Image (cartoon, rainbow over all chains, first blue to last red; front, side, top):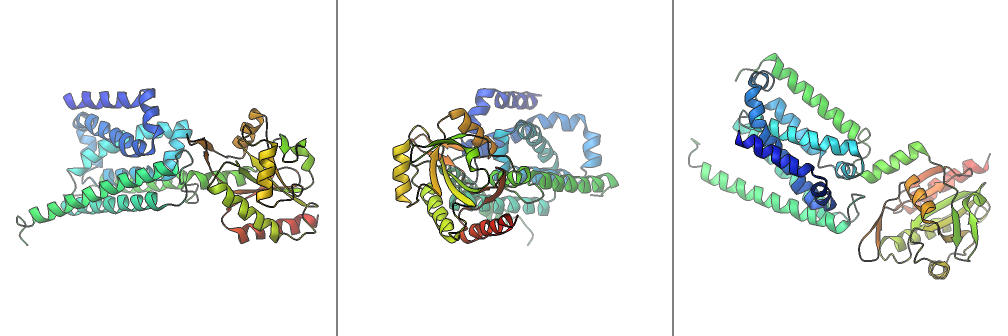
Length: 185
Length: 210
């Protein structure tokens, strides 16, 4: 399938040492480009795997909740300032990053379509508040949170999170106002 | 949508795995930043201060082992630093003033170590010493001229120094207390002066009774 190929190529590019080194040299790129792209690669590759192992996913991830819990835990872990630091300094954390995040993409793909509206809303709002918190943490922190990244980079990342948060709020607003007319209420 | 047992089991399993991941990843919910992890690990490992050669603001050259038998209160600095180092040193001065005179020099020495030996020569250190009103004896400012020795020490004590590209460095800061035998005894938050002074006093009280 075309998507699978795309995912493998994307993953391959991210693993190339110069690309990896460059993305990790800047905190903003590390957290908001490399990590999401790894998830995206998993999402692309996941398409084929989910179809191939369809019985497994139907049995163990029937309503999408187990997969989603996995996604939430892993992404929350990668928001710890420490995880980011250690990925740069410890090879096994780095390895864990390149394995866990594509899996996030895979499970996200499988779970999202199975989840009900309420669950989806909960997850969306959860991430909205989490990103807002990260924005506040990184912009406002008077100290350097990560040992491997400078304070100015930390602020950049904070603004990056703020942009995402605002974008999510705008999306939410437009969703609320456009969906409203269709709903029975 | 009906739930089967596998789905329920998978929910429990993922929650469990998630908790294990967070527990392991934060040293049991104790360390959420690499800095707190570093401190936690240091206090667990209690590394020995490597026997480096120091050159202080008076131009004296001696090895660290000369301090054996005394507690050493340490900071890592560089004199061209304009933000955190002056704060660190000002706080160290306050801790110094809180320690009774009877102990100073006899049981404990204060030492500020520069990790920028290229610029922090004897004259520069002397200027820095005057700026903080240290006597150069019981509170010394010193550099480690040998880069390999310096790197080894920074590594052992988990000090991460990154050049910021504008001639400065970004680095993590703390007070370190090394015991009479040269092993790391405490790592203290340099912003909490009273707490640090109390820790040092308690250690000295217990340590002088021996």
